[in-house]
Each structure stands twice: as C-alpha cells, then as structure tokens.
Length: 335
Image: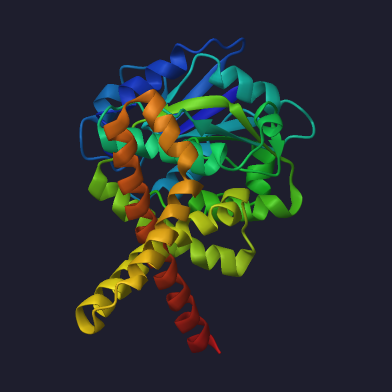
C-alpha cells in the first residue's frame, strides 16, 4: 500500500459520490487505501460511501480536525493525504502528489483548485476564479507557476503529508470544530521546521457552497486567522500581496459612506472624486481577474466578479477588524 486517502464525512450526500469516483478512476501506479471518517453525518452520505471499497470509521460529531486525526491514526501507510468530501481529483492528481511525497526532501504537498468549479452557479464560478487569482494568478510569476514552489501553501482542498511528520506535529487541533482554520494552524508549525512544497500544476475541482455559506466562511476564517497571525507568525505570500487589494475594497466603501455624509450635510462633491480614484485603483489591482472572467464567460460575469470582489473584500476587512479587536481584548484580560 503506497498512500492513504483520508476523507472527513459530514452531510456530503451531494458530493461524496463524485469525490470517491474520482479517486478510484485515478491513473495511479500503486495500491492505495481510502479511509472515510463518518463525523456523525445526518444525511444519506454513509449509504453512498458503503457502495465503495473503503474503510469506514464512525465517530460522534467532533469536527473536521478530529475526523482527520482519527483517519491518520488508522492509516496503514507512511504517506497520507487529506481530501475534502466536496473535492474532485483529476486523473493525474494522486500520482503527482505521490511522486512529490516519496522524495526525501518533501514533507508536505499542497495543490490548487481549478479556476472552474465542479458546480455551475455564478457564485460558484466566482469563488473558483477568486481562489485561482488570489492564491495563484496574482501572486506568482510565470516562472514560479511552471514549477513547484517551496515553503508556500496553495488551497486546493487536498494536502499530502509524510505520516511521521504529521504525528510529530501533533495533528490538527481537536478544539477547532467544523471546517475552519485547522489547516492554517498546523501549517504554521510546518513552516518552522519542515520541507513544504506547493505545485500549482496539480489541480482539483471543488463544489463550492452557496452565497450565504461563503459569507459565513469568509468571515469566520478571516476572524480566526487573525489570532494565528498574531500568535504563530503565520504568513503566506497571498496574505501580504493581497492585503492592499482587500484593503482597497474596504476603503472604497468607507470613502463612499463618508462622501455621502459630506454631500448631504455640507453639499460637498469633491469627496466623490477621491472615492472614485480609490475604486479605480481597486479595479486595476483586480484587472487580471476581470479579464479572465470575460474570456472564460462573458461581460456580465466580469461585472458580477467586480461586484462580488468588492463585497467580499468588505466582509474580509470587517472580519479582520473584529478579529484584531477580539485578540486585543483577550490579551488585555490575560495581562
């Protein structure tokens, strides 16, 4: 057995079949095992899983972190891979990850999402495009994209570890419930000692959630990530390089509100020119995204991408502000 694929399962009846099919249809030269950890799922997910040749581990609902740890503990191989139940592998994904992990100087491998999602509504298309741009297209040079990058993490709903390294790190934090920042917290430890590799040429497809769930996810992950950044010096290229893009979105909205107040109270018009200037810079910083949206889809979707990028930039700014305040209050209590 060459590698173990671990899938935490919770209410994934709409996606788990495609996820498992993609694994067993992979073009892989070695034997592998699949462990599905049933994290107290309440829908028909488990019935679907039982149709496949996989090992099933049942546990009461404890969250994705605990489910992944449980799966890793029961893995029979030296290499393990964590796969989200809403992710689809390409035929060569598994082989390419394995080829990296068997190298002596690689302890961890991450991949990226395709710029097109597995589901097809506009919000899903936008999220796939945003992930592609913010964590890949905006960040890396053409030369960097052509080869694996060391000490960098991409977000592809899939990550591979040498099992001994995962165990040395103590696994994911079981206190983190749901699918939140368990990966980011563990990765902050990886940076300090181990060899990490991200390959943007290895892709997965993702079933993205609906608009409401995306807003909640952006807010929760951003707010909770503030604590990691402060405590563990967690840093990624896309955090720093995209900071100005995100900040400009929040600044545009703030400037617009101030402009409206000054217009209705003092009849001033010039603040709108400042707001327009900030918004123009925001557009220019995201221009690659809107051009890709235009090429892949149409003009209307490009405009939609502009609106969504501005909206989510504001969600992230607000969540980051709340996270910073929360941390300051927490530190004041401790001191």
